[in-house]
Amino acid sequence: MRRVVAMVAFGLLFGLMTVGVAAAQGDAAGPTVAAQMAEMLQRGGSGHSPTPEEIRAVESEPGLTDAAVAKELLPLMGKALGDPDAAMRQYGLAMLIGMQSLPDPPVTAQATASGDGTAAAPAPAAVPAKGAGIVASAGPAAYKGDVAKALTPAIPSIAARLTDDDPENRALAATVLGGFAPDPPAAVYAPLLAYLKRDDAVGAVGLAVVGDLLQFGRVSDETAAAIVKYLRRPDQTSDARSNLVEAIASKPNQSQAVNKALLGYLDSDDAGLRARVILSLPQLDLAPDVFTEVRTRVADLAAGGQDSLQVVNAAKSVATCWTAVKMTTGCPVY
Image (cartoon, rainbow, N blue to C red; front, side, top):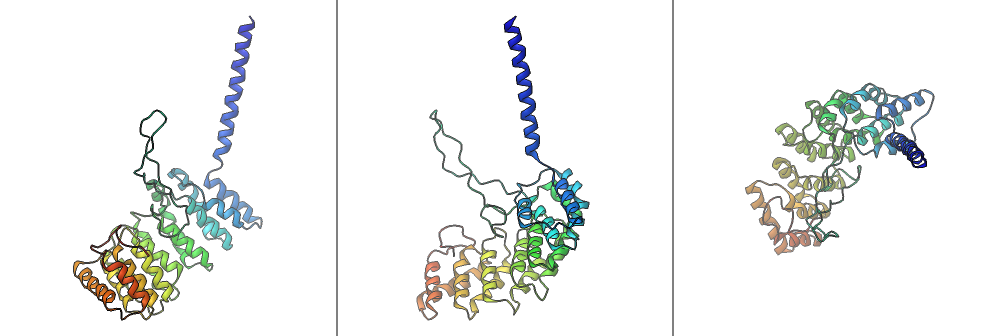
């Protein structure tokens, strides 16, 4: 009899523990992004402006895989992005970035032995955190396919923030639009191309827009022409041009027309910019005739020693190892 009572008591205890674990797991799941946004908009109506900590929290979310949740968010997101409070607009953009998912980390070739003597699975390489820059070795964060489709109606509201009064919101909007890679809706292109024509386009946001356009798959003639025109703008500073060289050269997806225009920076008066272009040459996708011509020019710079020491040293470091277009190894990376 005692044994039966003990077994019943154990069963009741196990049941209570199971309920507790389930409740804890439910709490850990937390509210959906739609619920978070609804609460923030309600607080905003009472005079609360999102704090930097609240904005960072939603921006660092691990990504969204449920398209139904994205659809539920749409009307609320429209209100946030159109809110008079710049911080509320920033909160909305940051939430959209948090909904992007980082790519699966590449698996390293090296494996270690497990305890039973068998080879363990290769360890995944580290993936950069969101917001680490427009160029990441493992690839940029992007929306999952169904989530991207669900968010497509929000593109006009997002694109409007490219010209936000707050410069930080402009940069966030560019990052959000880049999340529709690698196969974006047609609606993404027009606002990005239009931004490159703006009088104030030169700078960090313009750089991010160029990065977006290059990660959207094959670069069309229209897109290439817009980027080429942007590269040749007379108001581009040396720093802006150097950043463009680094960003374009490190993109897996490139345009030979864009890269040929980039080579025009070799005629710059800035020796540092010329050196950066030279060191980026092995990463560029160039047409065969352009590759031959520029390679000869680099060899002459290395042998002649008539340019600045910075340029000559860059030429010497590249001349012997640059043997093909778009090299990923074998030459120094600036």
